[in-house]
Length: 134
Image (tube, rainbow, N blue to C red; front, side):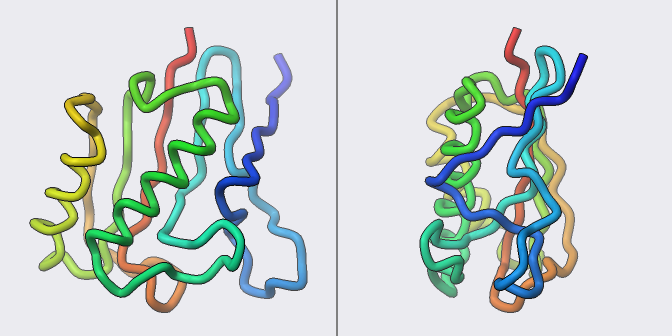
């Protein structure tokens, strides 16, 4: 079964260090009944710039980018089964978690949240996810 690349104009294409070159990454790949969404950050889809320094705003933008890619792949947040989160500063966890809870609006997922250093300056959060489409 071939993999199907999924693309959304409502989310930035990431994975670049030189904005003049195409990214080597897919926003998402569908394989059978699974949709794997690449890590997203708090980037504006048009400018590809970080939307804010505030962790709550960054979290909402990151989740919005994920949601838009999921929709392009025929999925919703209700079909997400797993998320992985990387926070630049683990002291942001409480504010991140509250913004995450509000955005998810009662949806349940499995999640791992670690501290690390997202690759881009100013990015405080990065999230990827896996959705079941069956």
